[in-house]
Image (cartoon, rainbow over all chains, first blue to last red; front, side, top):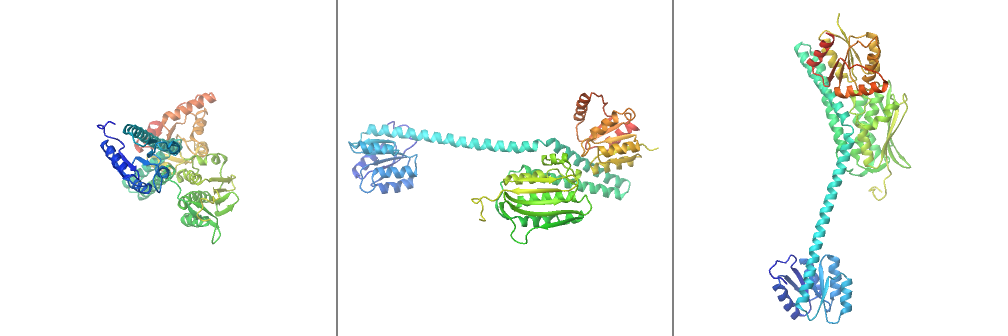
Length: 387
Length: 130
């Protein structure tokens, strides 16, 4: 053995019940550069192994109490990568073969020939080095795969937004036009001492600042990677909360809001309650906008338990969707509301539904209103915390 | 007599801005919210100039533009396009339509990309109709 080169794997545990062999071998191994720990029995050996986790173990086969085969089995169970070399008596070939079947790295026979031991240890070290290299490759590979996967996911998300970048630019240009226009009106009002012009300008500024804020909020919720934090959700609570959020808006638009939900214990599902509310608010706000354009506008909010899942529903008696609009509403940046919408609300609702394994569907005929449903799959028993 | 300008844009704020600007500079302004309404108003008021947005719901500005420019009786009415679209994109779409329909529609008298600057807009309107 080359005594000059430092050993990469030098921590070694020697288990033998004969004190003489322990003393002699440990001296010889220490001289070869190994840090040797010794144990007089299988049990003691396992204890020291648990504490020190040496890379190499030399163990005698025949020992009182726990024998070497059992030690080998236990060590391989705890740490499959540890190299275990078996020391057998002369002629114990059957035992030696059995130990190799149990993943022993090698065996040496008593009386121990130093050179044979050195060769066995060298081979064990080489295997350790190979395993370490393999492990680092695997880890690096896993890391790279994770990185690449993250990139692909991010790109897909960008692509989904990217398809609509030109529409986004158009939408921002319009907001800018509103902001410039508002500034002009304010300055004209001041120059000509016409407060009404300035007031109108300030309103324009406020309105367009609001549009920029809405757009940012919608863009963020579309592009942000967010895993749903699922918990049992009572859908009738989502309906009630959404109704409370938009009660003022409905009143302002002269729209009657009708809730058809049970007082207690509506249909439940496992979902992210906050995301669900966000999605439903988008559907409700669309419905109020639609109903607000007709006299005696009305929206009906409900939730249901069906055969194929649970559903949040909102129905309006607005003008309904033209076939052209019906084809385009899920694309993003398509709004029938002009300055009133970012054209992203339905995308937000659809994204939330998809993240929950569900979908958004609608029925509409021009002139007779529209029904939008956010359908979620029934809670799978193994996922549900409420079952 | 004050020149009549028809302002066609689906954005209320843009309509308000342009009409305030032109109104306070001595023009008579009529507004419309989309190409369909714009076409009706056009035939009603026979404006001296049309400012025209391109991307609008219901009917885009492209159809209205071609309606004006392919009718010999109306083609002389100048059109100032005010759009979020780049001028190049608009002209390209016109060329494609020209080939498709085997027509030759002239370029608009003026083109401003949104958002319009008040001075630029007023300058263009003055240059075109005086």
